[in-house]
Image (cartoon, rainbow, N blue to C red; front, top):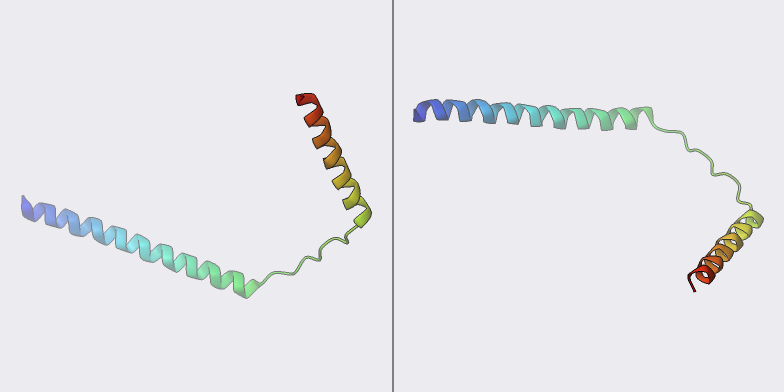
Length: 71
């Protein structure tokens, strides 16, 4: 009975070890592929300070209105 348990343990541990090796190999190959293909830098859209100011004003007005309704 102990011999059967040892065999089962050896098969189970070998299976887990093989799966982990396969997973590590896939992660490394994926990293290599991403480095090989690279990526193109996407330019940031131009900032429009006027629209940013209007957004901040709209947020401030929404907060004020929310606080008025709570009171």
